[in-house]
Image 1 (cartoon, rainbow, N blue to C red):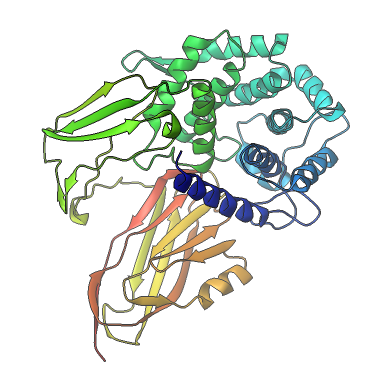
Image 2: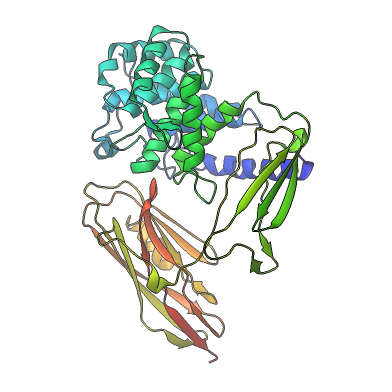
Length: 459
């Protein structure tokens, strides 16, 4: 890794660390917005994050110890941790206290915590293993057992049961585990499957008995990575990376590998050396502003000289006119933005009226709304500040091109309406950027507002 890349990585870690600290609640523990009461699952999640971060960056050990001690105080006398009452609706179909206890016990054991609290939790889990009704609950329990004692009977037996539950795809030679309900972080559908598969693979890698299954599970995770290099939701991305990094551990780059990529006869080449083998490299196929990919069939070839264990991903991006975009008849979310006018002069105020409808069958815990800011306009924040004061939204953030709102629990068929103002700063004729509403932990469940052309003339 070059010094420049290393410094950039450390900068990102520092920014992330400082941001995470803002979510700590007075008295200990963490919550989504740093507001009391702290959340048990999020606090265990924070303990894992800070413990991982401490391996590569200087972390205040008092933060880790405060979080650990706060979790100890929430533990019941029987060794378990209770399901957070204020988010109980989201745990329907999950295994209640067993899920919470498994997650916290894994977090403590994985972060190197020893002592009676972890022992009591493991003993409670042994006595309640029958409550693990689905692959996700079993995967969390397997990680708790494997982090505490990878050679225990419970670890081997639970992993063997999970091995029997894997879903094989013979065409892609991958395996995965399916989760019909929500995960602890509200993921559903494919993102829940990614979380579950990553958890199973991670636990299996702590024993030598499931090498073939692990390789096929890691191949599934690689296949599920999206064009942005993530796995959709934050939790799915973190767990997938955790599993993939552990799977690549110990596989050092030996010597230099020359890799060439050819698209429709145009060649690009890179070198992978031991010093920068862990750095992601991008190869773009364009000549100036001209894209070298074409409509229809494209031929791409990859050739390697030397040995490398590097993974690769091929991504194609394209744009479709809005009129040709096909949308589902019934979307989980609808968002509509109506402006009070589309023609105005500089320094005029434009009013945007927003309507969002949620069509899910069950309440959803967190919805994000990204509102595109038309070029040449500045946003009046006062309406969003009032929405926070009135507890209509939990938080908002703005950039030059976008406003992001965070909504808490939204009920089925609930309609949310509000207005905000923007001021035109200079003459322009352009379409508004895309505005989207989506479930934070299942971002494929979304709705999009049609862009509108706005014209601003000189006053």
